[in-house]
Length: 380
Image: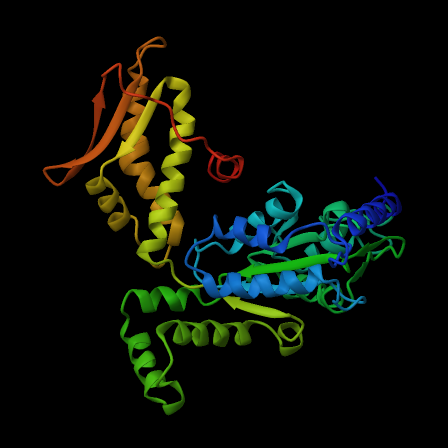
């Protein structure tokens, strides 16, 4: 569907809504900010400040009062690995477009050489492929539609070559990318641009390990009168931003509308992540007439073993694989196709986690319905 056709269709929808809703404000964007944020909050935990500021941004975009000659929004996500930087973009795409993959993702770790700039802007005139104007950018996902913004993610920004990164300056400034052939333009003015980076991760890991250097640095930081009422999160933010300024030039940093520093996941956040993983696992083993339940002692053990500030939610998933999925797969592999329903119960015995089989035919294997979003998130 062309942009003009979409625009006419949505203008007609606006007129009908104005008749039905009276004086209620209607803009060109067809998404509900409250619903979007609720959906994202169901996927992301432990990042309340980030989600609050993201909601503020979405309200501005929905009101359609952003500058018309630049992207709708340009944000940089910083912080430790495994805390939800990339996942928040997937959840946003799902909430707005109904599809977790309805955004353009550029893996910057594949663009480590200077000549890889051509992968974004196209080959220069005189080079092979210059007339085709090929690019990694997916134009439809970037430009979106009249009623919904496009979304693009530049993942692991710091790993790309400097020339690749600085080729994005005009995009961040005026929202237009002119391919080097001069015959094609990609419009980012209806686009939310997100970039992620693990800058400062090494410093954070050293701090998490209790290294003397960063313990001493933290002490000096808190001794400053202006920092007396600050928190540990404020200290970590200062460490990350310091590394950011060393890696990128001021003119590049200054083009971001917002810079977010994600916090370490706390143990209470892992409770939710554990539930989501077990729910998804139950969905996957239901085809074998099986169900898994965790006793409270097993839950506590998995969370304690799966808690690592440095690696976030990914470390918990590896812990679940080691202690739950590996023995579970072994026991399922010994079952025949037509065996009766079975319930696996994970519990602690003699300091170790065991999976016990309950072959009671009265045991129900009906699992809680798995949402489409959770299945797509974890069953991939």
